Length: 221
Image (cartoon, rainbow, N blue to C red; front, side, top):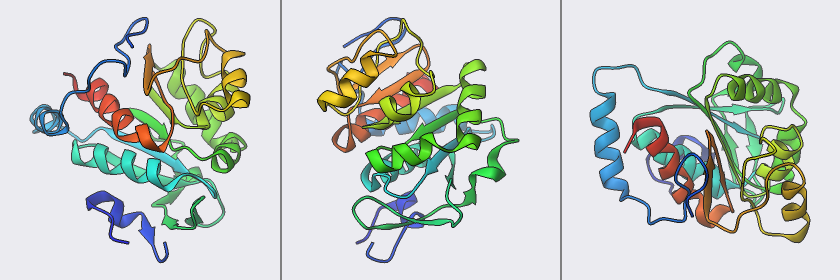
């Protein structure tokens, strides 16, 4: 399959207003408007550094969408593998090739860390001590953290990256809703939820809305 722009470098072979910031309950701004504004804001200044960690069994749609939209907006997206190899097989069988291993990302100051969905991939991401360390450091520093699908519950919830008074969303299975609700102020039935600097989204079908919301936060309205 042919993937657009930034996604081409990833895949090979067969390959509701909440708290402090607006949530995805409102109608998202057009992508072209956001891209133009982001490009204007970024002109003459270094590109914002965004980390996209990947693992075996992660979701190809959310990984591709997050990367593509952020690159179009002017961010420098680094795709990092938590596996031994840079090439990982996603949940649908597509092969994804990362730029670097996660161990090579520890010294970088990331403007945002955005995590794709896929329950199997989320469990593997959750088991990466390097990634969890980066996420906790970024949370303390007030950087943007984002997660899609199963990842808000399996990774963010498990490692207390969402505060007890913050709302979130994620994949709407009964088990994952209960798991997410147990570690924060509750699972919210919205495509995208932003509370403080944490962005969560339901799944592959809401990845574009999630990516555009991250662009809004990084580059302004």
